[in-house]
Length: 290
Image 1 (cartoon, helix red, strand yellow):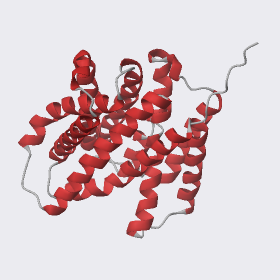
Image 2: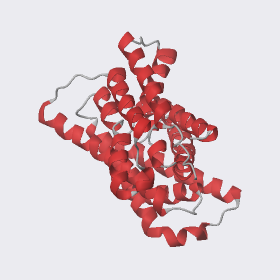
Image 3: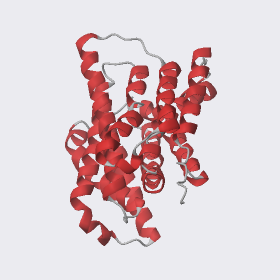
């Protein structure tokens, strides 16, 4: 991975890591489905303005209507809903661990979907090491009965969607600018999220509004630009490693902003995560021409 793409990966993780704080604020006054709708819709509007300012024509999207609809459903609207629903029945630590399994699913699915993104050698070691680090970092206490099982399966389902979505985007949208991919997929995701989000809508105050602005502009519009840019430039198997960094940075934010304590085991987990990401993002060795 180039230095530019590594910076993009870290920036994406920084944005998504702090987004949990703003989601928590927004959920004080709004239903989860409404937060999802307003976040996606404001992200789509922001990206639409960005595309216009950059002078890119929307006409390029005509040949990608069906693929973008598929991405909007299975890479945004559907996994957003699954994670929100699943977290009602499982603790946040378990949800973070299950969500961080996305790089492993990506490595497995790449064998059948896109062999150019297959992960072997030290990169595979890095992915497995990073997952062990996540388990050590966030921890969880099992429990919750049958509902916890269904909640866990919902989060795993979302993770599978992200893994397949990243691989699909890397193959299907070659030649289409990342900002257009992000805009088109968010437009369709807004349509899919509209029925439930509108049905549960209610009034909200300025703190919720500020949180929604951040979630829409930064955590969705800017983040999707970075994410699809990473897929196009570095590949899905590297871009998905952001799921390892997000819990790590959330831990750092909690310590810095909320005076939360960090255990020795969490520090070990953080070291494993960073080591795993370093190995997982390394460049493949160049083949020698004889």
